[in-house]
Length: 98
Image (cartoon, rainbow, N blue to C red; front, side, top):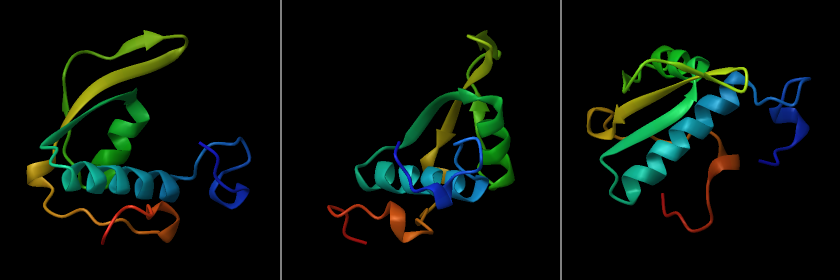
């Protein structure tokens, strides 16, 4: 992912706000194309971020350590989210009609 420096912290990681917006946009696009759910395999930090965003996820197994990272598979039911709108114009795709 190649985002401008203003969207990253000093370590090159996306800021929390940008990560939230990216997740919301991902859910929005998935809904637009008819997805009913998302399975995320990511760090437990993303699971915590989803919870702080008010998005319920269900673990599909126990967390596993891989290459020094603790990963967890989570299921997100998009039907219970309702409409999830993107928050920042950087994530608007030219092929999307909002």
